[in-house]
Image (spheres, rainbow over the protein chains, first blue to last red):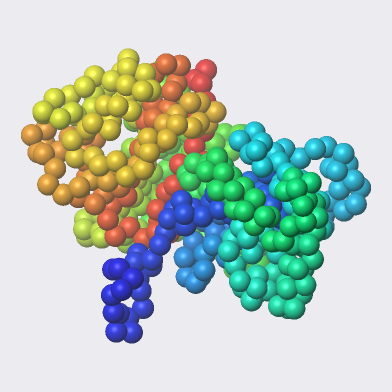
Length: 177
Length: 280
């Protein structure tokens, strides 16, 4: 059954919808990159995205009934990341800051933007990643993060300014996103 | 501009991010559901015990008992093809494998029938049974779906041109090649290399298409224990080809069309529980 067919009010069978495998093939890499930008840690990004997919697999048909699978997975991954940090608390976080997070060798040409993102406060990193790497508009970012749109706009504006300042030496002058 | 740098970063990162095997995600999901059900089952049993309503297993024929071997490790020897519904628990196999094959242990939930491997079909209840006539009667009603699991030492695999390939000494790559060239099997997933119970393995999922050649009478494999057929069109076979000291050992899980997804999950959960042990 293709997307253009008329159902005349019949509920789609689950077999007509995408499968988790389809979502995995289409979204896994995108989600890891988005969570890498948010968490500043590639290993953590892989972990939380895989955990999100495992939770989706465990929930079976309930996941398949969700309207926006990628948003569900991304939100789940972000919550897993936040939950882990809450448990670790400050002592562990201080120790982790002493160990350099792993950046994939294939991205060595992008170390400036990676370092610049890493230097941002996490709330600004989140909205920058969701706006520029997930292509989400402000109201969708607000929905996924559970914050007001005004807060998203404010963090986006401050994040852009901070990135511009951090990247100024590379770009040879004051720059604007 | 920062936007251009972010876009370039995204493009390269998405291209180079490694992707894990999807079967690992599925296995993780199944394990998560099993833990959830184990917690729920434990809680339910506690409630029933406290309330004095703990059910007693029915015993329709006192003369026929399951072949249980008391074992302090909690593992029961597989009773063989008794056509009786077994208790939930861990079983050790000798069926469908040769004398030099590894010992196979797997864990069953309630409601699985003992054939050469565990199987389930439409109409089968969850209660333990001791009389083969009970489950044979259910099977004789032409159930709408059927799932089963076999562990096989395979000697020959059917090939195109109505021939058979001897695979006993071919090793993992040769075995997988022969399997993926069997008439009447369409590859739908894999071959994907991985590990199974700590050993090198390859996973392939097949589907039986319509209009398969019949020159070999729909024979697919000749195993140590006997011939294995293709099944009806639409049947799915999930194969794990496992390297055991240079020889290939096959875990073969199958389900017919119209099998409810929950039953497929339960079957694959049993596959996930399989452990291979060297024979002493």
